Length: 61
Image (cartoon, rainbow, N blue to C red; front, side, top):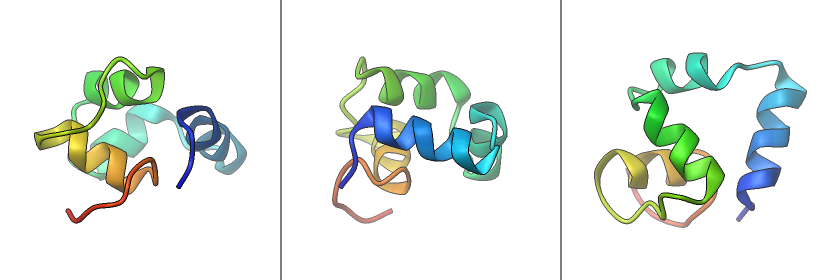
């Protein structure tokens, strides 16, 4: 599991813009920004999908 800051650093390390990552994974960019900022926990729907794919929480997509 990662922290939101670690996930953001990993995207930066790979040179992947958040908007591009969101589009590739079918998640609205506002949701990805919300999950990475800690504003959204990722309990349901797109926020859950983003949190799991970013490695912020354990779960299934």
